[in-house]
Length: 181
Ligand SMILES: [Zn+2]
Image 1 (cartoon, protein in one colour):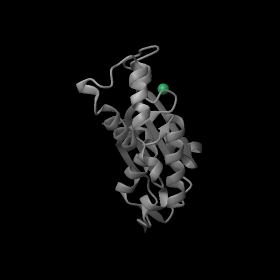
Image 2 (cartoon, helix red, strand yellow; image 1 turned 90 degrees about the vertical axis):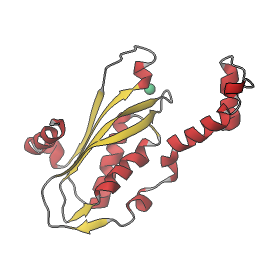
Image 3 (cartoon, helix red, strand yellow; image 1 turned 135 degrees about the vertical axis):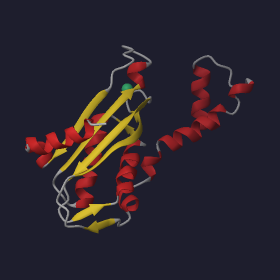
Image 4 (cartoon, protein in one colour; image 1 turned 180 degrees about the vertical axis):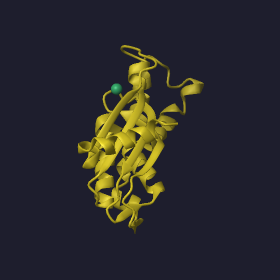
């Protein structure tokens, strides 16, 4: 990867041997590896059996999970927040695990719509519920720094399953709790 970054730097007309850039290909490769480390992770290891029996049947919400991902079309970051909710059916998952699931899928090349769906499907799988909602609000550098240069546009996507999809009241409760600061 280091060689490839070197080639990119040369391709834009820069001098890879000037002082500030000498170590850049190595640093960039390391950074890129970190930003895509989600490929080395999987759901089983992340969750590591950290699900617990629970009689709770009320909505569980984790909001404002920080999200750093990279758009698969331009390899530029998109940054924002993710809100996850589910209604347990006998099984709950540790809160930190939800954040780690978000992180695992974020650290891959993504589009925001798929990212939300993958997070939701993982929560479905791990908790064995059928009611999950995921909302992502993010700013895309590929929109802000290039192309149409819309500096302040935030993209919001949702992935709703079960009652979050079919029951207006469940969806409204989720949206209400998430948008309240
Ligand atoms: Zn993009």
